[in-house]
Length: 105
Image 1: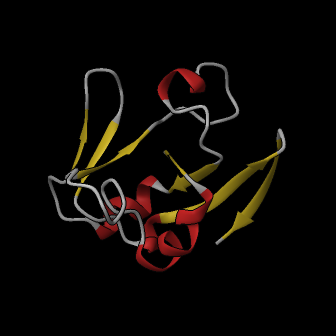
Image 2 (image 1 turned 30 degrees about the horizontal axis):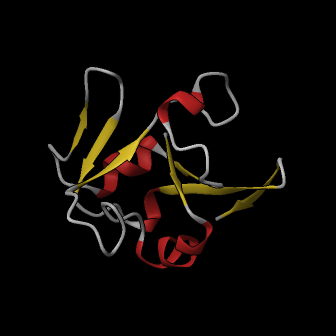
Image 3 (image 1 turned 180 degrees about the horizontal axis):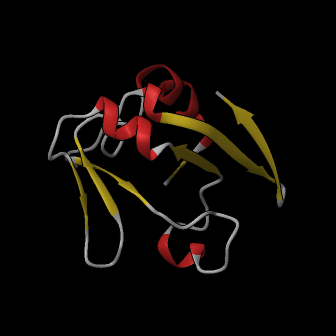
């Protein structure tokens, strides 16, 4: 599962996990895609201008959130209600200048 964000959010994500819409939003869920950023079709489900891809491990996710907080929409988007702890994350990939580098947590 993948979440996309801006590079200036990485430090907070590493310490606090994923928050719905970040610190300043009124959203109540974190949005995840099952499509990898490196496959065709990913641009259709995300914002092209974002350069940071957060990989969420589904097994870790299910072990650290309350039952009933993970849902799937009709179009395949995964919604996680509330905050997602950093321990659910597998890695963060950053795209710079068309290339990708991987930071493993």
